[in-house]
Image 1: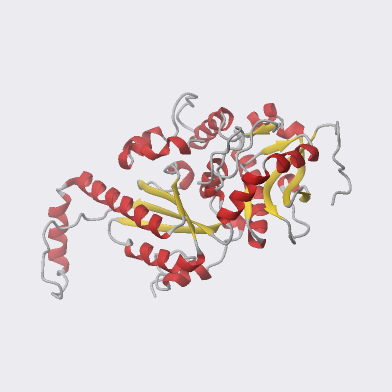
Image 2: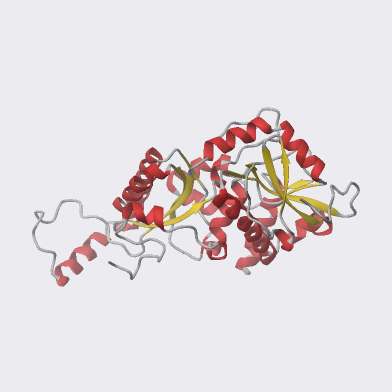
Length: 103
Length: 273
């Protein structure tokens, strides 16, 4: 076994068992960033009669840009900037797959 | 069902926060949701909506606009939402709805189940019995690029430390760009191969290093809906890509968030991904 670099939830050797047996992480141990990927770009989107849904509307994009700005704490927040634009441009194929995955 | 909050028509400032829709059945009791609201069920037409009350002075549009700029607040809501969805997904097929979907009252929620019954049923049957896995691949930090020609016959001993150092040094001259490109291609192949094992696959955007805490380039942020019978195969594909190009991370199993992003706002549902 090689415990050193391997995350505890992913035993290096146990192949299928690694997936099947590891079970769910307790919700509080899930990384927030992985959670936000899913909660902001996943789930059923219901519009129309909803009082409020942050699904796919500008509200959340704008606010998360602000949020990221405040996390960085340094560079001034640019409300029209793309938080991921820089990385997407560097990314494989220029992030081409991502348009329909935008928040 | 609910004690203190009958549908509350004109209920002053109370909204109904919707977490997920499931089939009927047994559900975890005493589940606490957003702002520690007690989760309750709205059954209708063979479906069940899972909701809790939230104050509209916190979840109205204007307050929310401010709150979403507060990472601590977002995290609290996200984790509460996730906690409820996880508990439901552990009990049976679950269609989570997007974060912060708030209704005026239960009547609206019942109406939703009525009008969108077929769409929810389709979503639930798509995810039933399957689990979502996340796979993230990063460029290995400080990894030497591959040697263009096989340096030695298979079976020959490893390089001595000195030789290995010289070889690495030489190979580094090929530049990080080549390395990056090779790793990116490898990540594409990983995604394609995982996709062949999965029932459905999807890519999320690369994560912002400020949130992920990792500075290496993220080459893949994938989500895969996998049948339990093929999870072993899925893991084997992953293991095959743990090499000097990629640093591969597995997350999950997740409730099927990434495979329920169906827009029910329009007349025609977009279909299940």
